[in-house]
Amino acid sequence: MTKPHRAHRRFSADFKAAAVAKAQEAVAQGLPQSGVAHALDVHPSVLHQWVIEAVGHTRVPEGESLEAEVKRLRREVEVLRMERDFAKKAAAYFAKELP
Image (cartoon, rainbow, N blue to C red):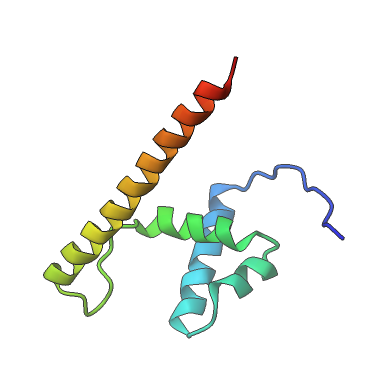
């Protein structure tokens, strides 16, 4: 059984800021961020995106050296390049198929 489709909801900046603060507080206490999302009736991926936007996604995890960060980011870039190349090849393949 599938869930009924929800209409696209818009959230105020104040609601998002409060949700991010609650999520950060929960994570600091060792609780999952998804629990906050469910309590606020927001999809966990939406809350996660708000947290990323609020804190920025370029933060270095605690204890990670600059060299380790560079190594991690290089791996991430390589994965992103492979995904991009795959998407290009798929687009070219499907473009040939169309009349």
